[in-house]
Image 1: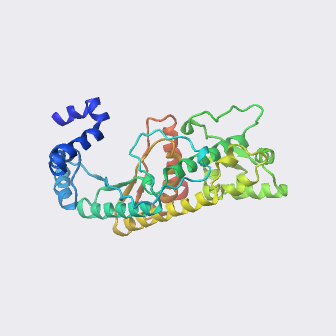
Image 2: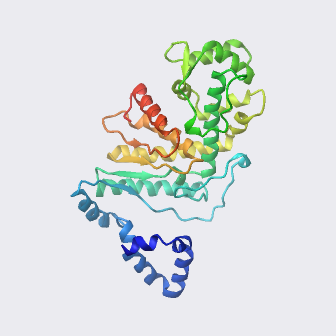
Image 3: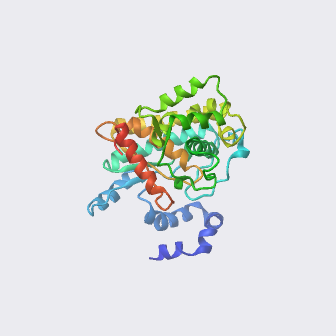
Length: 344
């Protein structure tokens, strides 16, 4: 009761870092850490290692409570300077709504990947039927994820634009991303007409080929699910390069440096999930702040297609159900899983 009441005092919460540093100076580290360990830490955390975690998890299991192991550790900074990505001025400022990892270079991201892998091994030892939680913002520069999210938003906006008459359709650029209606389809003629309005093409037949590639059902119309299955983040540069005007789509495309960082992120995630798949541990990818969430959604869906096709699904998404339009987002992802043959 006392711990919860203390955590409800706004002044303490706002100045916790200063109070901690003051205590370190006055009481010294050992006494400060012992007070925190036997107070706050033991109340909110399962333990510092697998040996301490196992009794807590066994106690909870008696009451039918499982566990999601969130490994609250980060690699130490090795002094590598922060590298700002190109076109940073086009990235929106993130409003922090979840634990945020500071970016201190690719080596730190590699080290964080090893920490997440330790968490997966700990789940295997301490609570095999539980989950390991990972935050993708610890595996790359969060500003890269903001750029990725901007690009994915523009891909969604583009589908709306090529599906509607620009003279009569509403402007959705200010609409919340998850609240944008995607329950419509575009036919071949509308697709061709609007595509030619936005992009330069050498031959009209190229547009027809693109439509046929996306129309995997050969129904003569394209749905949003088909659109997102075929328009990939890594290939958006080719589309952006053919823009007639340097608008939002052109500005949102990732440059070569950012694409390399994106591929580095993919490599780290595959190493983590490869281990999880090997030892049979389920991984829950945490939702984070809204400016990077579209990128997280995109990556999780890509990973679910690969790791959730066997008898034991490995990758699970987290949905922020307080956001407008999230119910439809869940239904779309469920439809994707049924369409593509993987466990939701």
